Image (cartoon, rainbow, N blue to C red):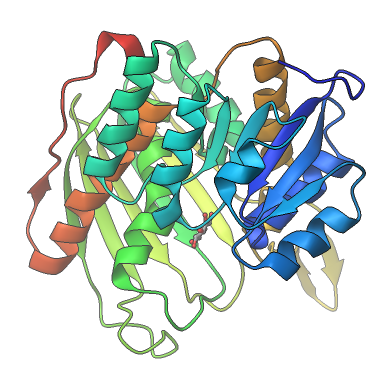
Length: 341
Ligand code: ISE
């Protein structure tokens, strides 16, 4: 599994945009058990720039060439979602372990094709980048819910706010890019599948890009009868906030208040709000990639996998239909194959 370069895992990073670049930096500077062996980006100059500062790292425009480069033991996919299916299938053909940034793919049918390919391979190879699961506060909330101390979870209230988005952000992206995190986090925190989605749409924020109905209020139900609501507000203008409150039979628990440094000055008290997800979730990304590298070096796959990617894709499809129709839309999914339990 590991190559001759000090026993470190050789990783091919596919996609050198914002997330890919951040992961290249992370693997190069933060993660001791891995090295970047290849970088691929459709923009050749960008791939070359990124590879230039890293010993023994090749630059490629073709993801498959990067996966097949010398010293590559594993693949981290951070290209746009539409390119994921082809990259995932190519990695599975080569039996390479993968960490794939969300989404797994851009629809439930393509996610199912990947799931079936992994089933045919006969062992799990794919981890999906739902990094909330590696955030310290989410982990605390999960442990508390699992302990049973608060009793059965009845509701989960979530707030997901970004400062701003680029002007080509769409209603669908609100669901696919943003609420997809809550779909996964709720499934994981509650240990339940999502069964139906509804979306309410207030009059849009005047600062939202033309055509984007922001904010929206997404409500979903689970197979054990819990109700989850998500305020998604990507043009809040003031900061990056991701909060969740579980309401259970015997108590409540809340995360995401970001109580860091508190100041008292000029007759006011306060603290700072992170500007974006890279700042807010740095430690979670580090923990996620470290866990992936450690498990991969032991020949194991841990963390959210192909089934989770598929289940979220199915929930997103229902969410987008609910946005469009204003109706409550059931989530259509296959039964979970025992392989993924
Ligand atoms: C982005 O893709 C993310 O993954 C962030 O966590 C989320 O907050 C943001 O809304 C998405 O666009």
